[in-house]
Amino acid sequence: MNTQAWFLFAVVALVFFGISGITQKLSTNHVSFELSFLWFCIAMGVISATIAVAGPVEWRVSPSLVSLAALGGLLNGLGALTSFAALEKGGKASVVIPIINLYPLVTIAGAWLFLGEKLTATQVGGIVCALGAVVLLSQETAPGAGH
Image (cartoon, rainbow, N blue to C red; front, side, top):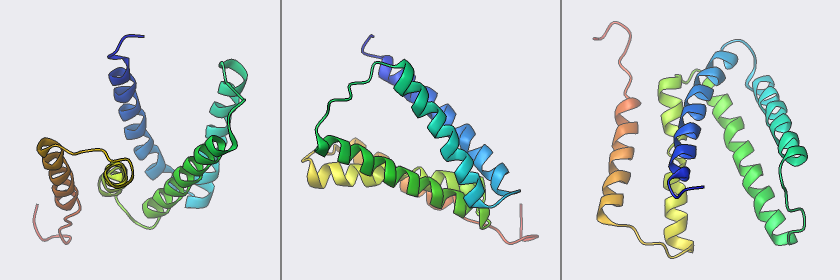
């Protein structure tokens, strides 16, 4: 696989995550966030089972690596659950999805604090722009108060 393959995978993930934000809002408009999340988990289970059966999976890993992967899955699941709740409780997809997708900023802070990764001035500028974008996206106008 060439060195730019990661970028193609990232773009495909961006499209999948973008579409999933729409499907999550549509589902929580009609059923509870709990039921929406349950179906989300069932779909994830199907994907996981397919990978376990079809893919070359190395099952012999240390308990600490299993624990880290499981913790990542647990936190991802809790994040997904609370995102479904935000959408069901009245959050607009155009606001909720951008806010929850600022999670890389938490990752960046953790990488800086715990992994010793350095940030460039350009990256800090990107972080500031991302935060500013969410502030602008989350501004709501009262009904009938303008455009």
